[in-house]
Length: 87
Image 1 (tube, rainbow, N blue to C red):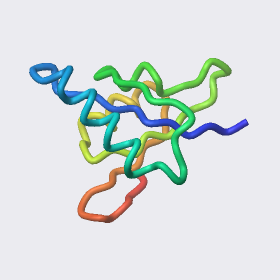
Image 2: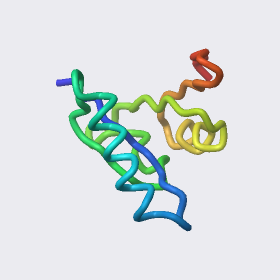
Image 3: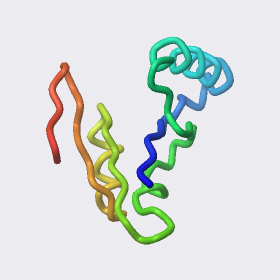
Image 4: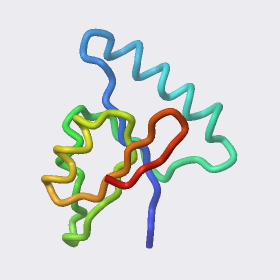
């Protein structure tokens, strides 16, 4: 089955504050359609392919995160200024 999750990388210098802030944001903004899981990890490319070898999709606003994810076998989309572009 398809699952939708949040993969986010909190800044290392404010890790604990940011984790709690992101949890609150997810709870208040995605309450009607909550994610199946939340992963907080700066190494996003390790999630590019699932355990069965199928690519995962990363939508991100940083091209840096997308390039590593794509090189690792994932599908990427850039979301910036309210525009979604498959890259």
